[in-house]
Image (tube, rainbow, N blue to C red; front, side):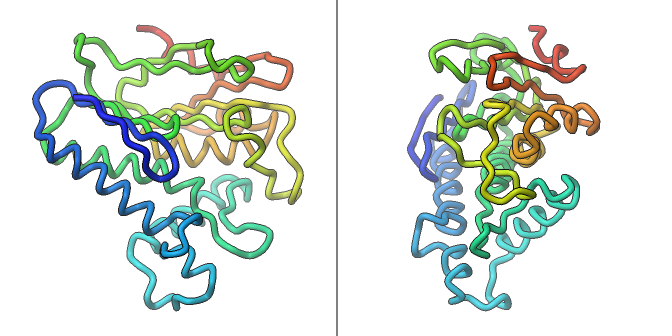
Amino acid sequence: MRETRLLMGMPITIDIDGAADAGLVDTVFDYFEHIDRRFSTYRADSEISAINRGDLPVRDWSGEMMEVLALAAQTKNETGGYFDIRKPDGSLDPSGIVKGWAIRNAAGILHRAGISDFFIEAGGDIQSCGRNASGLDWSVGIRNPFNADEIIKIVYPRGHGVATSGTYARGQHIYNPRAVGDPIIDIVGLTVIGVDVFEADRFATAAFAMGRDGILFLEQTPGLEGYAVNSNGRATPTSGFGAFCQP
């Protein structure tokens, strides 16, 4: 069973191998819709928008909001400030951490329902488990940042999470928080593999903001592997990345 819907401003795909209740797929998509209603900075009726307007006192913030903000603060600390959800105007934008967190939680819904073979992708961030309909490990293609029709590397996550940050699809949207307003120009794409998609996603955003030093950060951080493509088209993997390229 494979289905794609447009939610949270992006295509979200759920692929479940074997028999599954169609209602379960609806449950997972409903969860993503719930997350969008709470965290979208593009929706005037979202909780984060109300917080940024000053309409919602801290005592009324949801448990989910408090959890995400705590995780964002933890990530900021772990990355030396390169991950920061506070924008220059003082507002909060947790989108750099919410997607991976939501995908991981969606995977938990499937796990609790007894599903052991599945693939969830939201805007290029992926959590897979088990095997596909052909009985093979799920595989993920890394696109050429300069040619979206070309796959330059195939990885086999085997239960790990995969997240990609870059400027080639959405344009310049990640900035170095230590030099406010300065765009990242020395790398154009960075794929991170983590123990799960949440870990991959939060560190992909931070490592990309580090520019050319991001791949070194990933190399030195246990549990993370990465593959960076610079503005000249040269790719640099971490030392353990190749292990995920073997079928």
